[in-house]
Length: 335
Image (cartoon, rainbow, N blue to C red; front, side, top):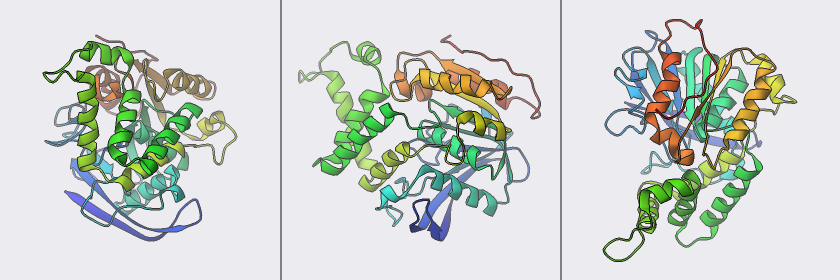
C-alpha cells in the first residue's frame, strides 16, 4: 500500500523552503515485528521494489535474499521522482535541492513511523549515494550500509555527464527521449552492446542497437516527467557527505555501521577504481569495511542485470541472525 507524507515549509539546504509531498511503501513483516531494511531507488526508479511490478523482485521478496518473510522492507520515493505522475508532486525549482535534503526527509518519515534503528540501508547508483547521505546524518542507528555501484561523492566525470544531461533536458525539443539515449550509452559498455547486437539490422535495415536506444527513450518518455528527470539528474551532482568533515576518513570514525561497498568492474558511470579508493581510505580508520566487485561486461547496469552475483554478495549480510557476525573481504566474480 502506498502511503503519502507531507511536510509544509521544509527548509532546504539552499535556504529556500518547499512544500514536500512524497510517498513510501512497506513490504514484508509488520513494523515492530522484524528487523527493518530501507531500500533506496535509482534515478528512474520508485518505491515499487518488489511484487509484480517490482524493479528489484529478483532480490526482494518471499524467501529471496532480502526476505519479506524475515524483514520489514521500507522504500521511500524521492520527492518529485515522477512516481505520482497524475498529481502535483513535481518539483520545478530543482536546482534548489540537494541529496542531503532527501536524506533529511527520509529521517522525518522514519521518525513518523517510530523507526529509530535500521538493520540495513541499501541502494544502487543515486540510491546508493543517498545511502551515504543518510549514514552521514547519524540521525538513525544503522547496522549495515550497502551502497552499490556508487560513491559518496560526485566525481568530475559524473559532473561532466550530468551537465550534458541537463543541457539536453533544457534545450532539446524531445528532451526525455534524447537524454535517455545519451544516458543508456553510459549505463552499458561497448562490449555489452557488441555482444547483444553484433551490428545486426532489423527487417527495415535499421541497426538493432539504434532500435534498442529508441525503445528505451520511448519507454522513459511514456512514464517519466521532464521535471522529474531534471531533478533526479541534478541530485546526482550534489552528493557529498563531507559537508561537516574534512575527509572521508574523519566521517568513517563516526559511522558505526558495517560498510559494504559493491563496485562493478566495467562501470563507466561510477568507476570501480573510485569505489576501491574509498575502500582503501575507509580501511585505514575502520575494521568493519568490506568490498565486493561484480564482474560483468554490462557496465553500470550490471547491478540490475547480474542478479546471481549480487545475491551472492548480499546473502551473508541478510542471512545473519544478529548484528555480530563474521565477514571476510572478498571479490565476487562471475560464476
